Length: 247
Image (cartoon, rainbow, N blue to C red):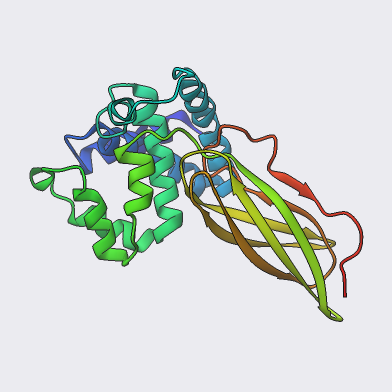
């Protein structure tokens, strides 16, 4: 990948789109760089590039005081208020990527086309634009990622039970825990001999969610998160399925 391409993506975004809010202005420019890499080399290459930013973001989040966060700290470190470049660049880039996965690229493009910097008088302006174009309720997402700094999620497959419903259908019931305080929609992949099935699941902060997945062969492994959602701990994302499925 040529650095000039990344720089051009950044500069062209600034030339075409301006906002008084750093998390929108800088975040979108960095998001455009990830999109450029995705167009050139595929989604995984873009996620690898974003991984450099996620590492710095995770380190920045870990630098927060170990004491119970005060409400004013959550607000002061939020994307709408922060002056921390790691947050309004790296975190914001991840937020835009997650929003695209959540609502779809066409709706996000329409919302950005409708954006007017002069009309951006309150923090919820961008949220309302995206909701109007996509019919998604994004209050929970913006509250966890934009209006407050709730840290990062921490996903873990708590349990998985496989049931063979017919000769070539295995039904998996999977419970995913989120040990962190920020919720997100995260991809979940079930691997089996010769293939994978990927679904998406919303897991709110300090909560869990259940999803059912059908696969044509005995499931072997579950992976939650492909790297598109920044996490505080990536070591607990793989769940091995032991033994045969029940009939």
